[in-house]
Image 1 (cartoon, helix red, strand yellow):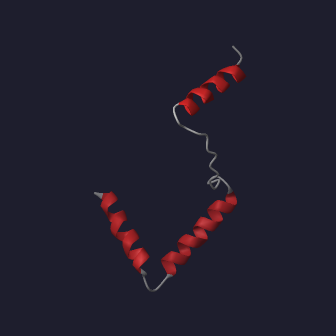
Image 2: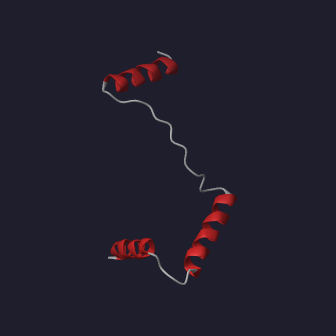
Length: 67
């Protein structure tokens, strides 16, 4: 059986189980532009003089990971 036939049969079995294929695009965290933008955003958040409710929430849930 060719690899194309095996893949097709595998996909057919998944569809028969009620599943469907989905393609998801995510940022390329290895790219230089991603690192530059992440650094910019982190510096912007760190420089904020007033914490919003959102930041208080993030800080509250992030401290629970340290335990």
